[in-house]
Image (cartoon, rainbow, N blue to C red; front, top):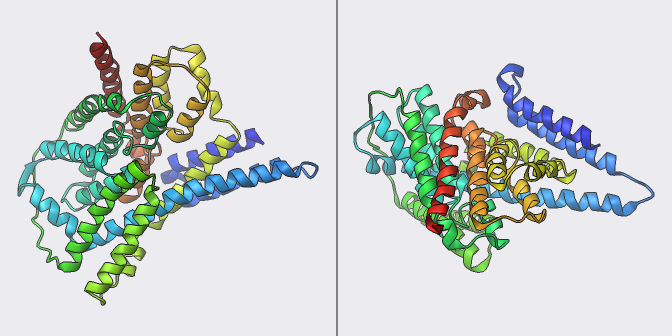
Length: 414
């Protein structure tokens, strides 16, 4: 059964890579293989003489489904907000305020990378990615140029959240396990930001010319400004409510969505807010569902545990670096969870290296992080293979960031 699930998962991930070859949308293929993997898990675990085993399988499936539903609903709420703001021209208007009428393509790339880094430090990765990509799509960029900017967004978003317990789930997991302190995590800010700038420098090679940035002429009314304010208030509330009261981010965002509907109803009853739900790209949500089902099945059959054997053969420094690269293939949450449960003993410096590696390493492949998955569905022409072309420069930026994390800790300890 375990081998069958591993094989099914391999075919599922391969269908994403070969999407352009097999001409099957990745949302459809991953959903099929993800559900098939769980079918095999249920059938293979069935034992009429041991009903407790079947009950355990049902329990693990519900746990996985709960995790998926939380992320799915969070993404649903965030995408509804962004769909409204994009349709009304709010994001384009804000961009016209922030950017000059003309800007060099290289300067714009550094601006986008820095903005993604900063925004993801304040908001969650998915929301930051949606906003940044909406900004990119609103600019008059060539298709090949837009891919570079999208890659900078994916990496910048992943790097921006690793230094805050509210910015990345794996960072929060490592902090709650008592492996690092908040003061230690703040030391990741500078190395992470430098790695983003290194990536932007590499991506800017060959970029020439300036971009004429069209100033937005959208007329925004009271409803538009009110919903814009509610959107940013919701982001701040997500951070505050989660840190101080443990409120799940999905609950806060759904509350913000409900509040948006209610407030808009009182201001303008004719505003068809529910219509913006139909503008959400549900293929993105289905893709998430399929990928998370595959990863969940691999986790339940302990296929991810074997990855931890690298700590028996290599030093924690090298193992952490490699694990970050592996997290571009497998979800970093179950990897981090398995590592924390394994009882591996490392210094604070190495735990910080792991925090950076699993938080940023997923950006090296488009399927390695939530930001990459969103980008594949939001940027036309950004497929797995097209993204793969940027993996060498992403690896360089990741390596520089990881090295700076370790060197900075040694310098502080000296």
